Length: 83
Image (cartoon, rainbow, N blue to C red; front, side, top):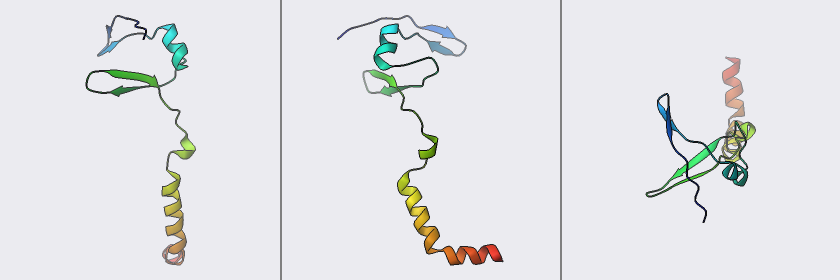
């Protein structure tokens, strides 16, 4: 296991540090990428955050349930629109 140390410094209301080039390469992180911190009792893990897929922001299971409900109540919903 390799250890790399960095200093922390104040920037506005935050404390910041930098990620060394070896870490950026290992995690495939580029400027602008989001990182994720996983907190446990005695350590913090940092990793590249999964990219958000806007088209899948809602689970496919949920969409299937909505579609099923819409089909089931299609006639009632259409009658409401026509009122």
